[in-house]
Image (cartoon, rainbow, N blue to C red; front, side, top):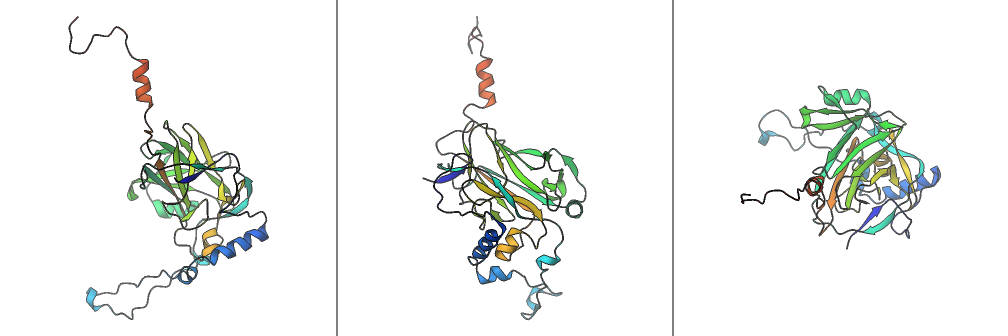
Length: 287
């Protein structure tokens, strides 16, 4: 049986820990950095630059391109904001499959960065359905959703425009008739344990018709550190792991529950029931 997370009452805290002040946050980031390999901590992910000529003529001594440091990279990433209340508890959830029923992703950056990334684009609503319409989600900041765009140059990808030092949250609504488990990542890191994201990670459970607002990185059973747009150098992934390859992307994987049809009582089935005619002609018979 797999356990997942749901915003609600507070259980016994085992796997995660609390960051209640700036000093303790710094200590926590330092301890996280010790969990990664030396190569990851140095950011050793450069690849050799191809040289002109046939592939077999490339020299093993070719100098790889210099990877920009975090301080040199423009645009936004996500850092630790202020602590915010956000109750949750563990709840049993058995997935119907190890593969998600659907997924989604959103790219974010400042206005200049989005212009450079998208080129031709069109503005769309801040909320979009995903995973076969089982869930809808969007990126919210302040009192509304962030400006959202789509471009067909990159396969109808979604892009949102943020502002440095502003907080944001991920809003999800379960549109189907059964519970769902949702695994979220920001900048390549899981939003619950703050480590490298993966589909096997535990997620948040959302009941049928419920809306969940994920405000930040989980720091205790009752609090999160707000998602806050930052520089790449000031991002959580860079400060904790020395790795800034995957900044600027928010990912979502949606899992259905084993033995439960999420569309058992879909709107189509409900409408069929409500439109049933008690005196309709029987199929295949003449009256």
